[in-house]
Every structure is written in structure tokens, then in C-alpha cells.
Amino acid sequence: MYQMLATLEPDSKMPAHQHPQETDRPHLIGANEINCRWDAARNEERGFLLSRCQYSDGVETIEETKVLDTFSPPRDEYLAIDEANRQRK
Image (cartoon, rainbow, N blue to C red; front, top):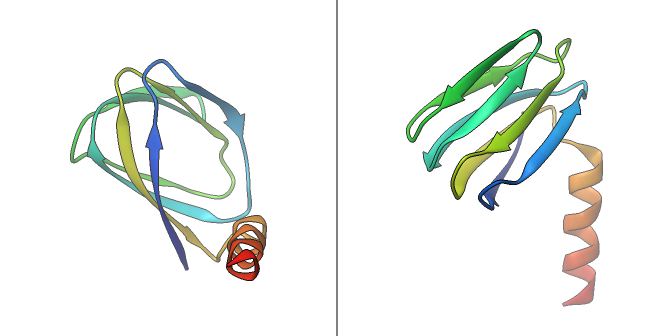
């Protein structure tokens, strides 16, 4: 499992993408539109999204949003970034 706190700026967009990990994404602050599979849903503060690995998802923020992304299993590219940051210190 890998967790990260992400702050998404208002009116930002993440194109639809897919990865093999499942994602638990509780929303701590803000609101955004989640485009998952064939559906779109507005996710408000204290909302929650569980994205299964076989579906693609994308995000369009409505206002500044903070989410706690949890990936299972961990995403190798994020582990590599963390390791590079540790080595710089």
C-alpha cells in the first residue's frame, strides 16, 4: 500500500488514465468531477472513490481539492520519486 496527500488546484485536469493498482481516494477538502469508466460523478468534501484496476479514471477539479490517494499495491514510479528525494537530503 502507498499513500500520498495531493493538493489539486482549481480548474486543473488529469486526463483519463489507467494503472494496475486499485485506488482508494477519500476527499478531505474541495470538490471535483471524477470521470470513471463511462460515468461522471461530482465528488464533494468527505466523498470517497474506489477505482478498480480495470477501469480508467480522470479528474477535473471544481475548486482546490485535497485528496488522500492510497494505491494497492504501491506504484513503482512514486516509490522511485520518494527514494530519489531521500537520497538528495
